[in-house]
Length: 514
Image 1: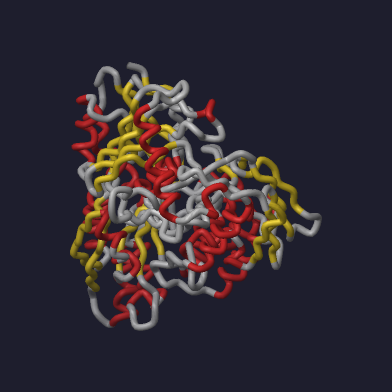
Image 2: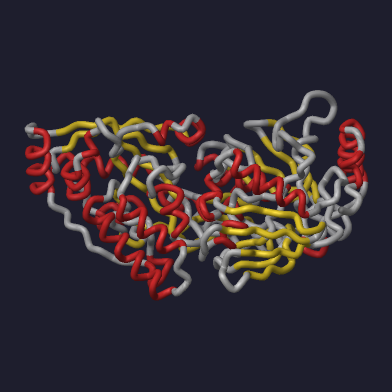
């Protein structure tokens, strides 16, 4: 193995190097970088790179870490820390050649051992990233400093998307507690990635400041001198920050707030087609009322999806049904129309419970106008013999405390994914990490496993259509619509291509004029 620079030095020397690097970034002008981008967003809740998956957390980590492979906004695979790769004929061995001359923010050299550390750590922490990584059924080996291999137990058509997955940031093997504030004079010592920006200030709940990494291995790609995240929880206050010039970029704007941006000079609204969708789900675990498929079906029969799309998001979405795989996935999408039949819902409730009406506490995340959607659903369900009490939860509380995984009836916002398989392995197969409905269906599990090993698109489409019918017949979810993601920038900003998952927006090519 080649010299690891500071890796053989005592930890104190590494900390001193971080301090020196940060002082250098502040004191010296970055190569050709200029301009400061300010983003108003919600505060991140879980900064653990292997676990934190909300947009503010992704945006934070995307600044300071790199992926082996990038997944572009149009869902293509692109090289990054891995400059090339080969796949064995049997589809079991993936060999990656790594970029040379790359260093972490503390001066340590990036080598294949960091890749091994990163992916073994995903296994140790049981990260949701493992869903596309064969569930962790792989071995990873450093062949030499610049080459790493992954060996799978069975073929996985989505493995490259797992390598470039949102939580697969490449970490330094020298840092045992990444993204944990340190004591003393160097609080950001554990935030050392190879990424385009270095964390230079972080006040949790208030702001984070990132400064251009002058030693970035793709120096021509970084245009900005600084990025500042200003943490503002209220969507209207974020809009006010944008229109006042206090922020340059906001994202996930509720449709109901769009009028506040109409006709405002110097503002451009961004509209990106996505698979973003609210999931209304009933818990199906033993002892819960959703264990009975008649209750699940009654909830579905009691909502008018066309009306929800029109009233909640001004008809901007595509009407959904009960399946998380939406129309942006082309032939993988199966549109199964749903019936709105409140009388049939009442009959099922009477049959299942012996009672004329049923009631629930309905937990709703306070994001993207979902409380407004929930109010409309509450009114629709009344005619279907279903009474719900709305319990609106702040996003940080609902997701931060994992309340969303425990409630009996809840509304959760799901962001877009590069490939449909990601939804299945994250939320719907038995034991999936985000299986908030506790759904367990042997046929769906088998079909999802079959899809994972199927590389032929036509054959895969057939499998996903079978899965759509399982969701329609006995699934635990309602998907009222698939919505675009809405953002906005000031006209000072150039080169920003908002990702369908806004937190994954690549800011390396963005510039800001004076």
